[in-house]
Length: 345
Ligand SMILES: Cc1ncc(C[n+]2csc(CCOP(=O)(O)OP(=O)(O)O)c2C)c(N)n1
Ligand SMILES: [Mg+2]
Image 1: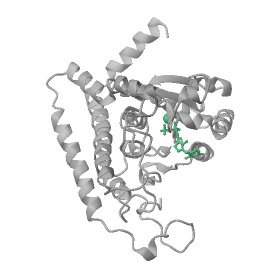
Image 2 (image 1 turned 45 degrees about the vertical axis):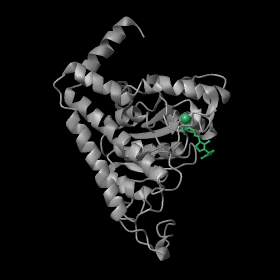
Image 3 (image 1 turned 180 degrees about the horizontal axis):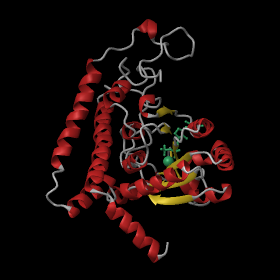
Image 4 (image 1 turned 60 degrees about the horizontal axis):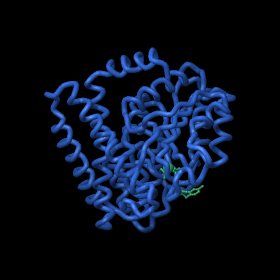
């Protein structure tokens, strides 16, 4: 990037108002506090089942979703609490889902890895690695055929780029100029394997070039950067110019699954984790906000967010489990069960 471009980018950054930065802060903190509490609930076995935490990666979900309208669509994968919350999904319904309660966003039948919030454009999260990438392209194709100008984002990990369907979808989306954004969260690990143990080069974004679409590599722990990159990709998609691949460089603090830290998984992770924790996206933004205006009241946001999470836990605890005879309701289409309350639109 030349000096001129750098200066212009800085100018754009400074144009972002304090209100937007506060919104980013609040949204990232909601994800962080929610997941910290989920971690405690997992330790206490009040929440059970596989849960993949995205602590440390909050800036990607928040920056990208802030560049979208409510009507736009997203798809996630197995690590998608952040995507759900950032797109505007109801926190109480998410917590209830993790508790397996009827008031959960998937009626308590899906758990952490099968989330839906169609009322805010989250069409689904699926733990089969890369499974939602073609679904996102399919929805983008539908938008293109309808001419409704909606954009679809597919969130997936670095591991998903090693699946064939990622490449097939990139090719199809580029050749049809589909309004879809491929948002790769490169946290350098797929389960317990470091990226360079799985591929010869650390160059995911380069794939875009092969398929004839723009590709960029962004600091995924800088929410302003993630927002600006997504905003440009959204504008391009809405202009009918087609897809973009954005590789967000980030790191998950917790282990692959559950509340542990996975520091025994290779020497690399142990060393890297400490370095990445210093790049905490939330602490960084907090300092940036206070550097702009030291009188800004951030503590009240912290208090409100914590209260919201506690209220979500209370709601989940007080909700009912699905009755035994209804456990398979909603699992199959046309099985006679009524449609989930929030899944009809
Ligand atoms: C097709 C398929 N293969 C393997 C798995 C087992 N699996 C679950 S998550 C995961 C790692 C995914 O890594 P990445 O895409 O980088 O996402 P991250 O966990 O880092 O967020 C694997 C291999 C799976 N769920 N689906
Ligand atoms: Mg990964």
